[in-house]
Image (cartoon, rainbow, N blue to C red; front, side, top):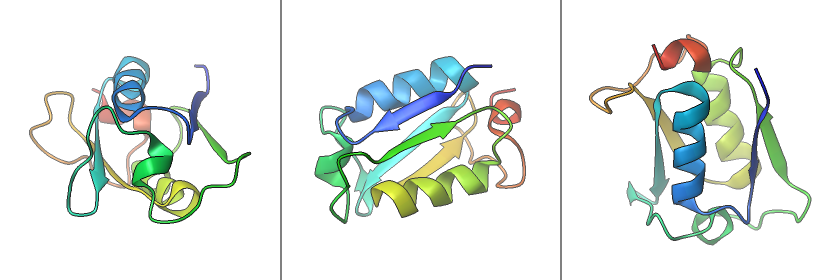
Length: 101
């Protein structure tokens, strides 16, 4: 499985689409307490300045909770991994690959 790359210049809709394609599960991206606008960039919704070289590489073996924490730490945005049909949140203890099954 290839790495899943994320950068601050990426649009929310691209992030969500790439995540769905790579892992099969749904990624919920927040701007404050609301869902982020799909046309916003990751940097524009971050609650802190993102360094120019900041990026995150995630693969299917990464735990859901770890991925969510890294997104908050590196990019300053809240995300939650949900089931493929977006009906419920994934357990933080499973891998990203398992979240899409």
